[in-house]
Image 1 (tube, rainbow, N blue to C red):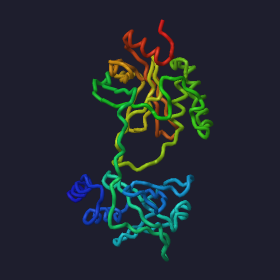
Image 2 (cartoon, rainbow, N blue to C red):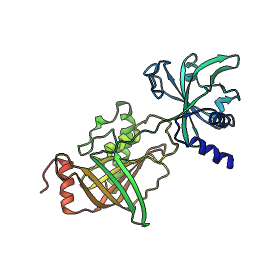
Image 3 (spheres, rainbow, N blue to C red):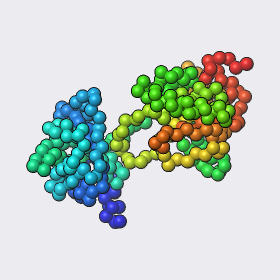
Image 4 (spheres, rainbow, N blue to C red):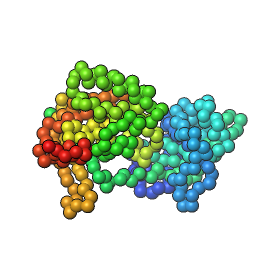
Length: 323
């Protein structure tokens, strides 16, 4: 336990490059096994001064995740790839970026995929690198915060930001869903519409388009700077009656009928008033989950909303005057 604590302290330093005793700790960790890694092909050419830059060899090449049983690490830093998938066999003679987690910290190095009598192997270089943290954009024109859960009187303060694949405060359109996902999305839509007809609680149902888009969207699989970091909820749809949030944090629990306090935050351009905050309470009206149970959407319906805030949301969402 003490050894693991010391290891974590070493790697959790602010240094971006790891060498010497730090590298030895990581190498021992890899030798102990049960460490999945991700391989991404890259050109040997690097941008000057930017070790993070990856130059894909071809647009059809994607990162490949290797399970621990495909990896055998030796003390000299040689990583043999045992019975690798066919996609990895094609990496022979190419430089790859190798990414993995060490005590929840994302690390990487670049190395050539070479071959000996045992098969393909990669050499761990003298210096390893920390994966840089991605700086989140904070100047959203609209965002939200789930403040508390009324049922359990529990503070949660969960940040919600716009999902980059939908345009908020505009009528959702089917073509926003990538063509390759539309067949699967149509199956979800038919299922959700049948449920809505029976329960009569989905309004005009237009919010189901971004729901189907989110549930069928395949995000790029990336190793992050820190493993299992909780991500903000994605705002998929909002109007004067409801807000729909997308959630990829499978451990989160939302139950039908539970009520939450919510703050809607607007940044107002060309105005002496820099922002407008709307405070509402809302209840979980519907839950939508993908078949793999990896993603879900939470449909919240407002339970309290001031008249002037209702007017503001209506006019912003519909582009029509509230009468």
